[in-house]
Length: 184
Ligand code: IMP
Ligand code: MG
Image 1 (cartoon, rainbow, N blue to C red):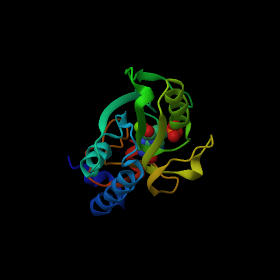
Image 2 (spheres, rainbow, N blue to C red; image 1 turned 120 degrees about the vertical axis):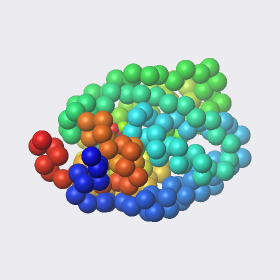
Image 3 (cartoon, rainbow, N blue to C red; image 1 turned 135 degrees about the horizontal axis):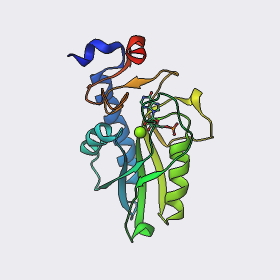
Image 4 (cartoon, protein in one colour; image 1 turned 135 degrees about the vertical axis):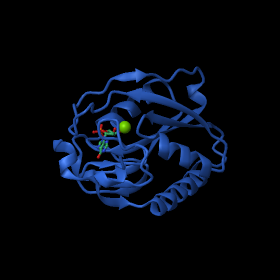
């Protein structure tokens, strides 16, 4: 079975993703160089893993990495609206840490607005966010990420870490599925 044959159109090609990741890494290098604090890339499982892996290789300044897991959409393509922490961040030195939350996509904004508040309450020196994709037209709560790869229209996308029902994460590009895939 070829996953590519379920894709209706490629929204962001492999080459464009690579360019986007390099551009964001340069912005991060520029903004955090010599900050005096530890920089922690905090990936949100599982959707961010491909983006995170590529991004960390392009960042030149010293970084540490960690992961959190929060409740996801399950099998549906519609947000459930509530956020649960399934894997937490444990470290005692958060006052010395600049956290950069790495997310695959922002939709309603609920996940990241909740997480940012949570991490600030835990005592991080600073909390910023980077998202590969942003769907600003879908916002239910006000939220503006600090770094954005690309704004996309209100379409459900897969690939480069993003899934539909846990599939398609391995595609090297971001694409839109054929409607019959959802109706199968
Ligand atoms: P938010 O809390 O509504 O902003 O949800 C963000 C999360 O929803 C992302 O981390 C994804 O896991 C998931 N999500 C939102 N839109 C898509 C999409 O188009 N494809 C795959 N996952 C999505
Ligand atoms: Mg996600």
